[in-house]
Image 1 (tube, helix red, strand yellow):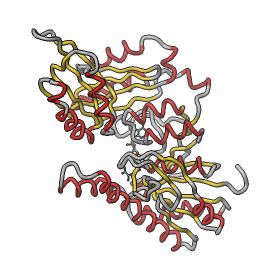
Image 2 (image 1 turned 90 degrees about the vertical axis):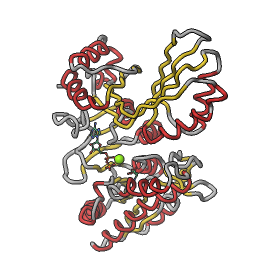
Image 3 (image 1 turned 120 degrees about the vertical axis):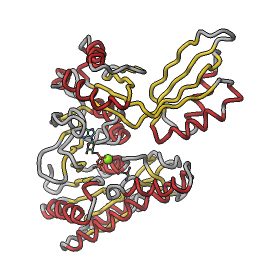
Image 4 (image 1 turned 90 degrees about the horizontal axis):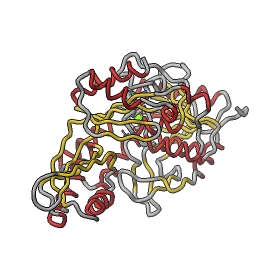
Length: 408
Ligand code: ADP
Ligand code: ASP
Ligand code: MG
């Protein structure tokens, strides 16, 4: 590392969950600064604040305006930046807080899931050059027309990685409430072990399949811009997990990690006319509503009359109501019989770049689940992962068994 390094540090909700934790963050940051490093700190809202704000809005109406949700949710992070700056001032460390917009984070206009267009961090550079620690509100940005946006749940990770890329930081550290990335969520699988390193692709799959330790879009961004980062704890000094480009030595491990996403829901359209263009129409409308679809399964129904299929797909649970509304809006145009929804599914996945060169992995997964009496719903695979949907109530039993079978 250069003698004076530029470090981006991100502290998540638990790490800034109360004023003692915020003082702890200030102490850690000041130590780096005293060594002569320049430090940009990205913070989340205090734990529970974002969920609390969402609940307030949904108490008023189930599907609130997304623009107003961004206006509301952006306030969570703004509390933390100011409190963190105040905590640094209290220990005589000059510091200045900035909103996403002040830090130059420009996004598109897709409220609640905005993408970063570009970052022009002039104010950040100026404040650093004047000797300050700069504290940036995670999870938020602004369109070029001055509308406040947010970057999707867990989006402070993206703020940190994108700032690290834009500032050409020497080091990017993601501080959280676990010691790093584990072979499974340590809250679900107590004997999961911490990984020393993991490839971008594996981290990306795990993150998009429910391992919320990193927001998946932030990992995608890190991969694209080659930002090597470390996930570590804000509560101790243990080394964390390095996330980086894959190396030859990583291929020896077949399954790097296991995840369980409890936040999925299934939508089924019963008796959809089986003719060209119908699926296109459905998924175009769903996409236009910015609902992400993961697994899709189509079954030919063998009833009498004109050919029809049942079409099922999965969405993130918070998007279920929106997806249902879109589908109901297409009923007269498409002419399906009915739409069913199921929020009691879990998506269990195994991930590892070693799967590319090992056979028999799917068989072993299905056998493990069968031995546990767990029924498999939908299945999807890629070169480096296998996912299945299962009954949510059996999720924790299943992930423990699968972890034991593949990792130990
Ligand atoms: P932060 O508020 O710091 O962003 P999150 O709650 O978003 O923290 O993410 C950290 C949590 O992610 C951990 O407390 C842990 O329960 C969960 N988690 C899920 N999968 C994993 C995994 N494979 N390794 C580590 N943590 C995981
Ligand atoms: N506060 C936001 C959330 O809870 C962003 C984040 O924590 O990263 O999703
Ligand atoms: Mg998070």
